[in-house]
Length: 201
Image (cartoon, rainbow, N blue to C red):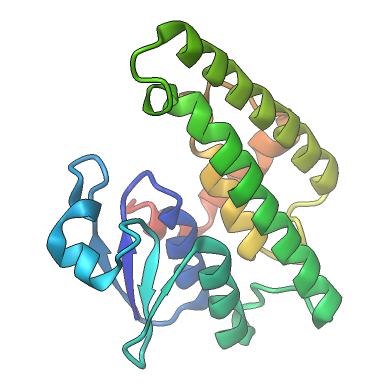
């Protein structure tokens, strides 16, 4: 397997999942800051021009965070990245999609990069930033409630935990302080040796 990853991007979550499987894989760095996702050689591989992208052992490329995380969970069952049973899997995917589609795309993106959507209007940028922050603040509260007093969102660190972790890793850039339960969760995740390796530490 080969993961196309940009440090600081949501592909960190996929790298964490690959580390949790213990399976061998390569990492190819695609620097979003330098615009490498738009270079012809990367677009030839992934016309969407984004990360994460996972080149599988059969030579096919898989894109989109929820789908890649599901594929990893199903193909490495011993890692326990998916809860047991169909309903457990549905609930994990429900949480992953909430993080990616609502809190990431409609929350943190606006909070961190409002100029992308209103390049010539500083007042509108501030409106967008606050809107994104409010979406993330509400999401953090929901996630903290869902976590409760548990260490992990399901029985052990899995696809949902990796998604929540990458979002929490952006908290300073977003400008929203998570509830104590999520800060403690982030610290537990960050202490795992697999997460340390994914972070390059």
